[in-house]
Image (cartoon, rainbow, N blue to C red; front, side, top):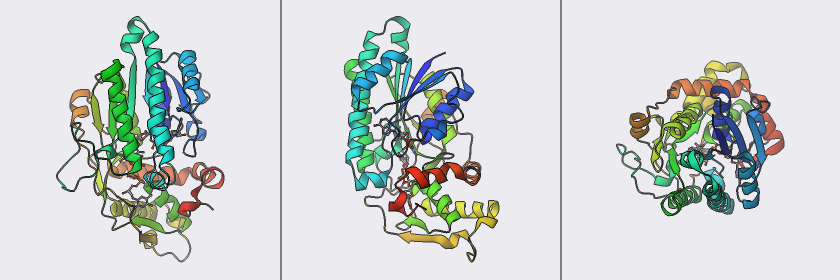
Length: 356
Ligand code: NAD
Ligand code: DAU
């Protein structure tokens, strides 16, 4: 049994990972999260009473607080997910991304390094720092037959992806210079339950149910490679338990779709699963689709080559795009209290016209 320190455990992917660790394994978990606008303890409601779960409200930029968490909880493994994650926000205001994604990762690395240096024996030998990153560090692909491999050079386009690229470089430098045992994973777009309402898939579902327009940036032909979040959580656990220190693993779903296809898929699922929730006078959910001004610097296509993690660690996704999207739309239909609370109380969604 191990003790996992999960940063960003109250976010979308972090909470899926924590639910997996508590519900599917015997390990103990301490979540470190500052509860930014994107952090939400209600995403962890089903595990908070479990004696193997602990929560620390801490900003990863606060080194003293991090030292105290390490000293108190004595983790065997750090899984670092805390980050500012929304590309549009990074374009509006990059500083929060620089602070959390770069400075925060640096502070966490230093806290981990000093803690690890003081460990001895097997605890020192088996310690691991797993940095969770994104395929956006590779920039975009024009050629429809090309894929991102673990060796693809970095070419980030947005302030968000540039800060994630910086954090990946810091993590690898802490391995090479100080010997800190690290693993990096770079994953494609996630979707599923508890996805924050500003991202494309939840925004489309929620806006459609409210009879609001469904904004599609530019021509809608940009391609993302979609992975169901619970498949990502399982991949992360596979990597920390079976992965090789110092390695990088790409994680992806083999589910490349144009944005317009994603939005149309959601509309079709809503026609089937929630025809009665369509606003009076609206013929079809698809009639709400509106093409809007493109995102500046918008990456055209992401596509992951996930053969390394499949071949070396035996992980493959369980969900197809069709099964995962059906589960996701159903979850948002059944869990309106979760997202309504965000729209009503906590989220500055006015910018996106989401606030009621
Ligand atoms: P999210 O925005 O849903 O959650 C981020 C979490 O980090 C929140 O709980 C937030 O409160 C916390 N946080 C933010 N700043 C913090 C700080 N300074 N100190 C402590 N906690 C802080 O993000 P997500 O979509 O779950 O992504 C998690 C990680 O996975 C990120 O590192 C992201 O770059 C990476 N990733 C995301 C995707 C995706 O599609 N969402 C894909 C690949 C990789
Ligand atoms: O690829 C992994 C990345 O996926 C993660 O690293 C990021 O943290 C995560 O937010 C996600 O980034 P994207 O920018 O790809 O996700 P988003 O949901 O914001 O947008 C998906 C695509 O849809 C993108 O091409 C932009 C487009 N889009 C987005 C929104 C919010 C629209 O067309 N309309 C919208 O309203």
